[in-house]
Length: 115
Length: 113
Image 1 (cartoon, each protein chain N blue to C red):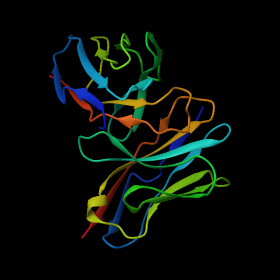
Image 2 (image 1 turned 120 degrees about the horizontal axis):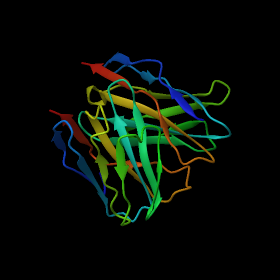
Image 3 (image 1 turned 180 degrees about the horizontal axis):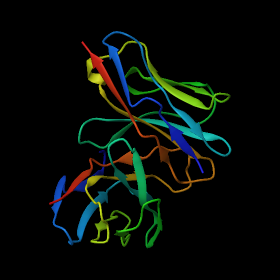
Image 4 (image 1 turned 30 degrees about the vertical axis):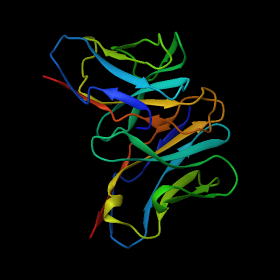
C-alpha cells in the first residue's frame, strides 16, 4: 500500500522449481524487508536490506535468496531447497535504517502455493 | 532478543461493546511498540505506536493502546467495537538499538452484530 507493490498476488510453484517474488517501492525508502506469514505463527523475518547491494539474513533465511541491485527493488527467490514454501509472503519498507521508532509499511502480499 | 506475546488467539465481542486485545513484550532497553491490523489476503496496516511520553496512545479508526512499563504490556483498546473492526491484529516490538521488528502470533478479533 502507499507506494509499495508486490507481485504477483497469487503464485503456484511445482516441486523443485525456483520462483521469484517481486517487491517494488517508489517512496525512496532505504530499508526493505521480507516476512513469511503462516497461520498462528505471526510474521517471521526472512531477509532485510538497509542499503543497495547489502542485505542480512533473518530468522528463516534457509531456502531463500534476495538481491538489492536497485534502491526501489528487493526481489525474493524461493529456491527448491525451501521444503515448505507454501505461505503468505509480505514485503515491508521503512524510510531509513536505524530509525527504530518508525513504523514499517507493508505491501499487499503474495500467496505462494506448491502444487 | 526482543519478543512479543499475544495470549489470545481469538477475541469475540458484541458490536458497541468495548474491546481489548492483549500484548506483552520483552526487550532490552526502551521499547518501541506497534499495532497493526490485517484484513483477509491483505498486507498489514499500521494502527498506532508508542515511542515515548504519554502512556495512552491514540491511533487510527478510534483505536488506542496503553503502555504499561511495569507489566511490560501494550494492550489495544477501543471503547465501542464495530463489525468492520473484525480482522487479525498484530503487536510488534523493536528495541532502541535494533532494526529487527518482532511480531506476535496475532489475535483474531470478531465483532458480532
